[in-house]
Image (tube, rainbow, N blue to C red):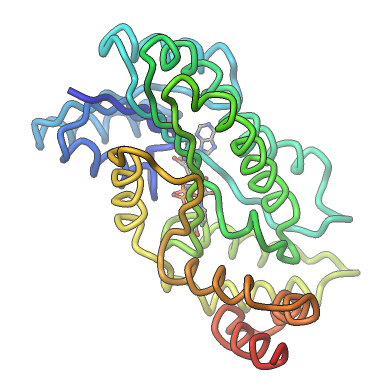
Length: 290
Ligand SMILES: NC(=O)c1ccc[n+]([C@@H]2O[C@H](COP(=O)([O-])OP(=O)(O)OC[C@H]3O[C@@H](n4cnc5c(N)ncnc54)[C@H](OP(=O)(O)O)[C@@H]3O)[C@@H](O)[C@H]2O)c1
């Protein structure tokens, strides 16, 4: 039985991923941060007769990461795939967001995957095989106002992953990054709530725009199950690619951004002032570059 270790399975893409892998015959080690979420996953697994093992682990704590990976190896003896999914997004401006919040985002989104991957790699090298999948974001490629730490954390993760890929392919280990656009999970709702609470005077107008935009987009994101199915497809691919846009929005935006010249790209990013950013902004930017 193939085994997969997935971080951040209390909700959203991680939970959907745990379910999709389990339904497709994988032994799943699903990390969560608290016992209530572990119990909820265990109950689901019992109902499905699925081989799903909740692992309590915070990706910012090295001891917990080491223990979590050892726990999985003690049961399965090997790990065929790792999905670094756990992540947070804290909106705010470059100038005003406290440095502690920048650090928190980097700790979870960048150093978290670094810690977990380093804990899993010795076993994958020994096996001579493995799939490491990083859940990144479209935000790694397009820096949005109000989201600097998030974009920075995902961009750092992508480039570090590109280096890693060239270090470990010699051991039969494939590294891939998955770039979803907006996905209908708790994350966009939380971003919206945080933006509503941010009344930062020098940037109040911008933050109001961003809040209106996030409200307009609420509930319109990709189904997390579709992203989960892509994760499974990558884990099963004989030779996975490095970069996978996830969902229609991600494909459209990446295609359009690649076709834009520098002023067009700038206009595209600036069109965040529109509450219909991804749709109206995109077509305006594409037209202005012609
Ligand atoms: N939703 C989107 O629009 C979108 C778009 C592009 C990329 N993504 C990426 O997709 C991934 C999953 O996000 P999601 O949308 O599914 O959001 P979500 O429902 O909020 O899930 C985030 C998961 O990460 C976990 N997590 C947060 N901090 C953690 C920590 N310190 N240690 C361990 N786990 C931690 C959360 O656990 P708790 O419940 O304990 O907090 C939760 O299980 C993230 O990497 C995110 O950046 C999301």
